[in-house]
Length: 502
Image (cartoon, rainbow, N blue to C red; front, side):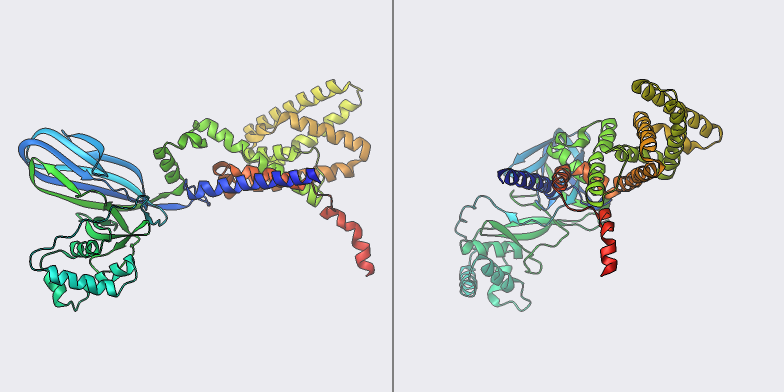
């Protein structure tokens, strides 16, 4: 009883680790569940222009750190300028420097971004309480009236923000709102009204992603803090929430672009949208994170190709175990069908079947002659191996001279396995007769074909290589099948007379 509990515990552990690792690879690493899945890739180019005054130049452009997007690659075009990526004022920035410059200048920064699943804008550290608001002269009373009105109509930070947004962006604005909008921009006014109620808020800038757009400007959005998260409000409409095509460009820093030694500075954006394989995107993201060394994709291509083939073997093993234990098919050799199926992958199914039947048929004929010589077992097996080699060579030459190039792939058959198959079938012929040879030989070919069809399935090949936890699940299934003690499906034929009598 104790051993059964330990067995079920091992099965549960294998299934948990296997399924859990597959879920992790999909949700965290971004490996797609289905091969051929495409992802949307946004290429955003920031163009910085300014008039240099013949003085040292230092231009700092805030770079996006949006949790809703992953950066695949970044590049800059700035001839004659030094470029440094640094963190300043709590934000990541591209800093261009030059000892002296004069006249019109242009700097470019390009980023390739991939949109991830929508994630909340979490804030691990609660922001400090806002400083008391100092209003412009003559608007204190109007501002306090709006604060009191919104406070009475709200029940929390978000509902207060919604009330403020409704008052500011309502088409029929009251006199107090019109007075305040004469001194503040809408986004700035909303942030001031939030801070007047001791609620953390800030103005951020975002880029609306649209394919083929040029010279786009950033738009202002208002972030309101509540219960560990920042919530977005659109100052243009007063609505809360985040559009799918919004890229937050500047959040923590005070400004998007800071330049010393120049005038008339401006930053505009061009956007291009394209699609690319989701698997390539996931590999690039893992490489950017430094996690690619733990992936099979870090291996040389030759080793990757070899591993891809080897990782299909557990699939073949599972198919063989199921067909033998549950269905009850007989095969010549336990896992010979798996090796034959691997050969079919190289030869294609039809060519492989024809080649296999030709080799085995000729081999059985020659093996029948060798049995009359009363040789020792080792000598007879060796003679069969050499004979199989000769048969493969002869068929290859014949196929080449006949122009049947597909026949050349017959060399991929495992020679030793074929020799043992011929030896087994010859002995079986002598002991059980040709019928049993046909049953086991046909069963082997049927299992090999089913195994081949499973192995060449693109979904199976994708999963066994990219989700290694699948092999733990296969191991658990094989162990569970090993506990099966019931009837095999083909054995149920014995009960047919009973069904007829009823």
